[in-house]
Structures are given as C-alpha cells and as structure tokens.
Image (cartoon, rainbow, N blue to C red; front, side, top):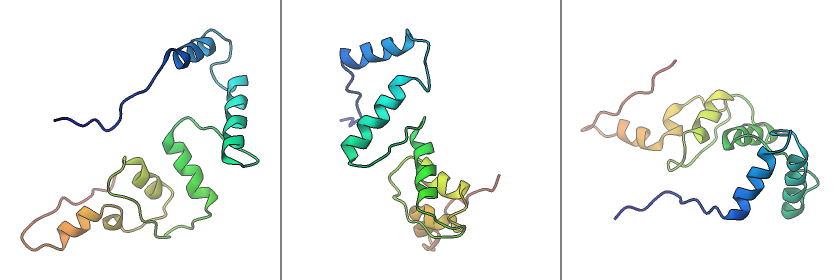
Length: 121
C-alpha cells in the first residue's frame, strides 16, 4: 500500500480565486496579499502577519525573529524537508552537522556501519 505524504485538497473556490488574481494586473504585492495577511493576523490573534513566497523563507524569518546567534544549537526533526536543516546552516546557527541529521550521528557511533559524510560546498 502506498501512503502519500500529502494529498492536495483544491476545490473550484481555490481555482477561481487563483484565476481572479491571474486576470488582474497584480500577480504579487496586490490587494490579495494585504487581505491574506490581515486574515491570518486575525486568525492568529496577532497585530501583524507577513506573507512570504515559501516555507523556507518563513523559516528564515523565524530564525531571525527568535534572535538566535551564530553557533546556537537548534534541534530539528529528522522527518522533515531539507529546508528545516538548510536554513540553520545558511543562518550559521548550527556548526555540528551531525546534530542536524541525528541518523547520521547515530550511524557514526556504530562500529559495524559507515555513514556518508556531509560535504562542504
């Protein structure tokens, strides 16, 4: 049996909303963006909300908003998209790559197995 990671749930309402924006002169930074941010801020009970282009960009903002310093240790889940670890490396918040990939650290500590080593670019 195949269990998908996620399945889209897109109705005609979402399709119509996208088509409305595509037919407008504002593909970005238009009135729908402000409307979306206001709706999210009301839902979250916050004064402000900021929309970004991707989950990765959102993670960058979270790291900066938390005022984490270079070298601070941040633990992330091993069951995630690579962005959750890459953003920490990019923002220089984790210096120990084995801590970002717990399976790698586990494999390094087993004498009967060899784990692949991360490569620096």
